[in-house]
Image 1 (cartoon, rainbow, N blue to C red):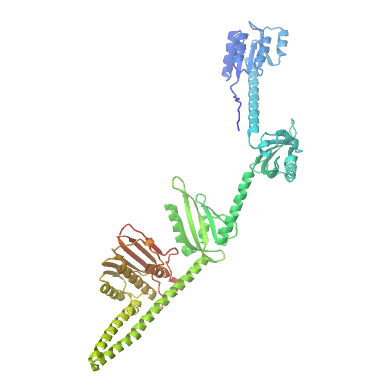
Image 2 (image 1 turned 60 degrees about the vertical axis):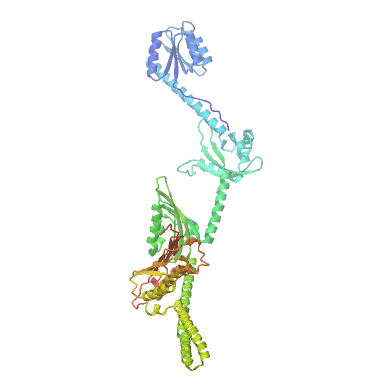
Length: 639
């Protein structure tokens, strides 16, 4: 759209003094300049006319008798050159006919006689010039309004109280397809839907009766309506209508501005549909979202978040402290620490914790949060999601208990098989060996040789069964405890593999719960087996220590190493078995390895407290167990 702006500049008022009395003209000039006016002096008619042609003159103070032209004729000619200039005639000795002729002229508005009363003439000049400035400002305002009305995209219109339009801006063509003349003929009744007109009528009645409830910030009426364009298409418009009361000069009328809001309506509808789809998806996934303004501490929850927390909407004055009031007391410090770390370090956080609903129901939730900062790294906003994982936690707990039971059954079965091999099969083979030994002296030479071979085979078989029995479950683990069993195992491992074991321990003399003892032993056993099979190392370091709350083991070798991420848990049952055993007890397992730099395996197992009867307290069995991932795999640059 091209807009041409007419330059209307409101300058300081300009006055022309025309008088052949040089002293009087100079004196009057000085007085008017002191009043702040721009003043030009001419001492004859021709100079005055030349000045009028070159400058914009608002007021002329002219002597009626000049050397080269009469004041009456000068006034006529100035009126032709400067139609808006007004004239004050000054005379000292003119005839009455000249004075009457001068006063009859259109642009003469005053008549002063000499000697001049300066106070009167200054008062008259001030009155005239203020009126000129007001008229000029009014013309400028009118021009700017017309410029706005002719070029604005919104439609500006006026209508009388019967809805007959008295003015409409040219933008009606772009908005509804009608020309100005067509719109004025149709008027509001032909453009605005009937239901909107009914609202207009009622609003006008309220205005006229004084019952219209005005908003504190506005005294106009806003309405939206669906309008049909000239080509039959439909658009949505928003109209802001002001009731202009009647005055002495004019009747009451309506002033309106109408805007095309079709795209905004479509955008709002698309947003509404997206929000509805989001709300439905959140409901299905039990996943809500939240937004915390860190400056105002205002917390906004989605519908699903309300449902997860068991709160009816709206949850008034929601703040971060309100959220914390829902968090389970045992998890509150953990949540606060996670949020604080995110605010201080700028990291995202992803945590599991419990909440207590208003009805007392405990639920498990997973929260993911992120923080936004300003350019000075001051946190401004935190937003994220919350998901109800109660069912998942229940299933995971059931699977954990099932897996724990399966491991127990596996260990029990190993123990039974080990005992059967040792007590039954081993004893039978021993008796058979003794029987053959006693029979050999009474046998022929050729038979004795065969019996000796059989005895040797039986001896080898007894040794094999004994090794299998020990590998399945060394009985001393139950009889003597963890520390003696480890010493025995390391001696046996070195004898079989020629790999030296550097073993250091602390506070392992006490007895641990069976599940802790067997898990620590299995981790060390499996780690040493992997060292012998894959590392190529000729020595291995084993460290084991305990505190009242936990037992820790660490196995380190300087062998070939590997990339932990490349290990397929489906094919590597050793590492997978370690992780599963540790996870079932609520412990942690880390594997640090780099090709060529060896491997470090570290496990920490929580030791449950014991009650007065000396039995493990089931309530505290999983105390301290991380609610996120229990196994951490690291790839390091070296050890």
